[in-house]
Image 1: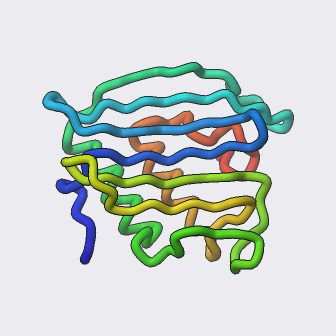
Image 2: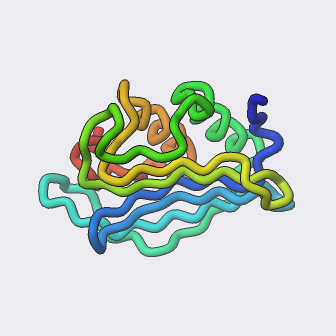
Length: 147
């Protein structure tokens, strides 16, 4: 069953490395999507601001659904494994990550994660690009996705 962006009540993407962490969570509210952005991620190879603590903004339903649809369509999220570990195909990474999607009643639709392993075929990049439609600073603090 394909997940429709209109049926998504919460969409979150998070990354961590040691004590460093960053995430964007989107929650469907009456007036649009509440976007929570947190970043405290040290990267000595990036000039980007590495500490942005807890910013909240509201975006339109249209933009929120566009972010979700882009992530699903461009990254093919529904074809990913549930969890990626060192034994799986894909590039090694220092990162731990999670993509969490719930329906409008807070029931789980999709939960994906990786422990020091990214999905193959550069599938994470379209997820980050989709999230940047609503929060352009997301993951620019990490050299792999600075651009």
